[in-house]
Image (tube, rainbow, N blue to C red; front, side, top):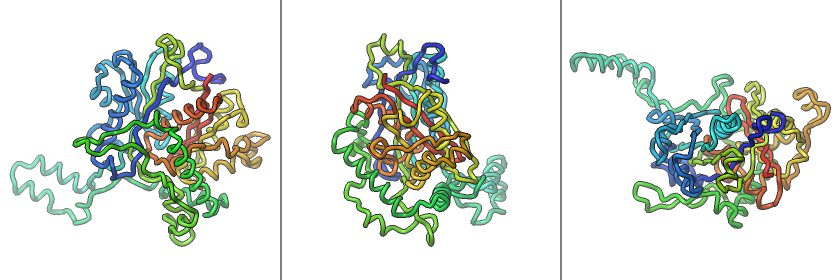
Length: 435
């Protein structure tokens, strides 16, 4: 919509509050939990902090990228496992790393069109709890054994299996369309865009430095809840544990490339890591928020999604979705007070920045006479990003929204732009405003 979600109907969508868990290394402090448990924790705490009555909530939209086989509809399970009445509508979404942008815009659309007044949106990921499956021959044998009438017949169901058929199967890491992992695709982008190892390491160190400073200055105190970890509650997660406060370019330079051992530039230091965590937002119509006495953190001015051919540069999508979101907001890049680009890999952020400032890219790919523009360093990822904070796939988008709105408030500024890449050549962007 040209002037923002619901503008034609006079219904702006307000982001009233946001909250997240600490983002923790996979198989670490949240290693015994599930995405559902993390989502339930953050939603319960967010509802309590905002003093919402559970029956006032109209709907919950929530996302998870690697779904649980025991609770595939995480949004509905969150409703049924909290104090919300079972009549609260809920649905789950998945758009890879842009999942909680999708859950947020889904909820915002329902509010904008008058179908809801109050919604909770967010996402969770627990990569400590990856669902393993079995091979097709073993699955077939298990089914046949379950139908067999006697023990000898059950045993014969497994007679044809090889040792390989018995191995568990982890979720696929490679894109079916390209045969490449996310890291290999990022390596391809670094090579094609001429982005070297030193430049990536400098950007990664910048992320850690800024995230460490943000924690030291107390910027995340109201944004990140403390989590006493069940079932014994003896350990309390208080901060993101990926932030390296003492890192240096010299240390980073010692790490070996992960995806291209011989010629690669992408390492564990200049990439986001496997992370557990959850985040959630409370969205309301502007009218309902004001009637209930809430001061919104801000409003969703516009949003846009984009898709590119993953066989080209799979993670370059924000270079397409960001200008589209700006156009829908009736604004330009230089109007933005803050810009946050998802740090899947340093090479990806640097590639996106390169394309946004490129006249050739604007002419050939966007059909524009002028480049989108340069992103000023002092406006970009001012509190670090996923390289330092961590990246629970389903939770990152909502984290970016709340972090940006909170920082705009601290600075007394008005406008923010988000861009996030996602697997499959997908991307999402949002323009946020405070006034």
